[in-house]
Structure formats: structure tokens, C-alpha cells
Image (tube, rainbow, N blue to C red; front, top):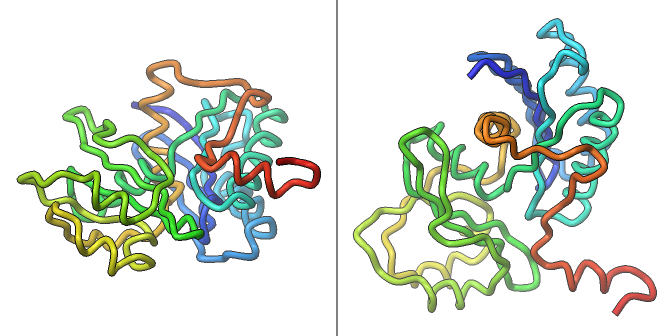
Amino acid sequence: MTNKILAIDTATENCSVALLVGDKTYVRSELAPRDHTKKVLPMVDELLNEAGLTLQDLDALAFARGPGSFTGVRICIGVAQGLGFGADLPMIGISTLKAMAQGAYRKNETTHVATAIDARMSEVYWGRFERLENGDWTEVEPEQVVAPDTVVANTPQDNITWATAGTGWDAYAESLSSLAIDTQSSGVLYPEAEDIAFLAQYELAKGNVVAAEEASPVYLRDNVTWKKLPGRE
């Protein structure tokens, strides 16, 4: 794959941008839970300058579509759409949970990953993924927002050691310690844009792109999101 893809992620406390140019990846990443709006565009500019490219030189723009922080996901979509509109780029939304699975593989070459982001309100954003031979990932258990005790009740024992990724494992350590499956920490707490860029290659090859105006988030907790808005029930 010889694509040029810019990826943006502000869906969690981490803020990261990556630029994939063929086999080379340029990366900026910083844990900045309250400064996403200040940092993300300068990161984009730095990477484009470093690579000697403009937005118009790119093949696609990838973004973290969620799940994650409502505000963080909204910032990510807004910034990505602004850049996509300006350069008329096709857009690719990538799951933050799937990105963490790829991050676990990048760091530890683990091929089975159980992801859990702390969703607050005594819930986690949960999903399990298995790496395919071509380097892409498939869902073993679809992404969902669920109570940790429900995860424990609905996860059957198997003969696989699952690498864990995400903040949910620490936030609900006591509950998730009762899981029937064997687990081992991957050390991955947050999604990273470099993994989003990597996964976006597969979606671009399959034609899974949208125009900027069609880029949409995945909150998983849409009913709660609407309730936060005045006049919604």
C-alpha cells in the first residue's frame, strides 16, 4: 500500500495526529485532556511541513469516529470535516476500540485484543477483536456500551489469552477481574492516530469512504447524548 493518509484522534484524553506516506509514518501525540482544540491543528501543520506535503497531496483523511468522550469525538469530527471540506478529501472513520487493538499488536504483536474504555456512569465501551492474516481486524464481539458486570456475565471462557487495552480495565479492575477469559495487559490505554492511519488503508482499498459532509460519529450512548441538550428527552 502506497497511500498518503492523514489521521486525527481526539476521542479520549489523548490527542494525536499521524501522517502515513507509504511505509513511513509521521506522528505527534500528547496526553492533553483539556487542550485538544489548541493542539490538534498545529500538530497537523507540523506533520505536513515535515513530510513536505499539503492537504491536497493526500489520498484520504481518517478520523477517530468513537466511541469515546462526547466532546472529544465531536472535536475530532469537526476538525476532520473542516480539513476534508477544504481539500475535498474522502473521509474514513475508524473505531477507537479497533485502533487500540492495532496499537496492542504494534507494541506486542498480540492478535486477540479485548478493549474497554471507561465510559463513566459505571459503564465501559467494550469490544473484542481478532487480527486477520492480511493485517486487518475482525470483531469477535461488537462494540457496545455496557456495565462491567454484564461483560463478565456474557463473556464465555475460551482457550485464548486476550490482551487488554483501554482505560476501562483500570477503572473497573475489581469487576473485570472476574472474567472467565485469560487476560494480559498490552500497556495500551488510549487510541493513537498512527493506528487509525494504518487501519484506514484497508478501508480505502475497500472503497469505504464518505464525503466530508457525511462523516459521522459513533457515540454508542446516543440517548444520553441527546438528553444533555436543552429541550431533548
